[in-house]
Amino acid sequence: MSSNSCLKIGERLLCDDQIIEALVEYKLFEPLVGQVILDRALATVALSEQEVYHALADGEIPAAASLEEFLIQWCQQNQVSEDYLHKVVLRGLRLNKFKQSYFEPKIISEFLRIKPDLDQVEYSRIRVGDFFLAQELYFQIQDDGADFLELARQHSLDGESLDGSWIEPTSLASLPPEISNLFKNGQEGKLYKPVLVDDLFWVVRLERIYPARLTASMRSLLRGQLYNDWLQAQIAALVSQPGAIAVQQEGAVDEECLVL
Image (cartoon, one colour):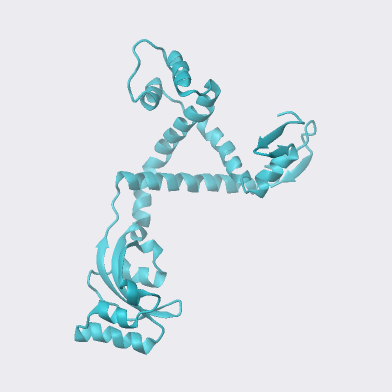
């Protein structure tokens, strides 16, 4: 980009330093840094012809075309430039291969580490502001066999008297820690004594447990999380180095105008 180049977005023109200022203002600088870091990692990731054919031609190798000819035809059919093919499409394939090879071996250990938070539960709850009322409701259910839902309709706050007290499958990680800790080693059907959560006393009963499983979708989710954590760590490490990221005037390599 020359010194007088501008980026036009709709009716707005961003010229020279305005582009840098916009990246900072809209919090896009760190994502840009991440992609530059990623370029270094992807430089060592090579794609085989079979991998390219598998991704772009549904695994079928065209009989009469070399890979180069196939890529030219693919660009024409998809109305993209060869530059876009290499910088965006093939880069995306290398990124997927990088994620697969680098983070796949770590998935099982990561799954086992966070599995307690991935497990889901269904539970019933009553929330009241008075401890003695919560305790009385607990004993009515525990000792007298009172109907949990009926007591919730009569006494529970925050709309549960209308909507019902049965909470559909929810991950343990999304629950208040006071409740999540009860359920992590809990048993289905167990009723718990009142617990204080954010100024309200909860009476809860664990109804069902749905242990997390390492399915294909879960593997994909964990692979993505591991990749994101890695990239954020790489960005933080680079940004923390004084002078590692700087805007410099053309022809003045050592002159720093903006350091992040």
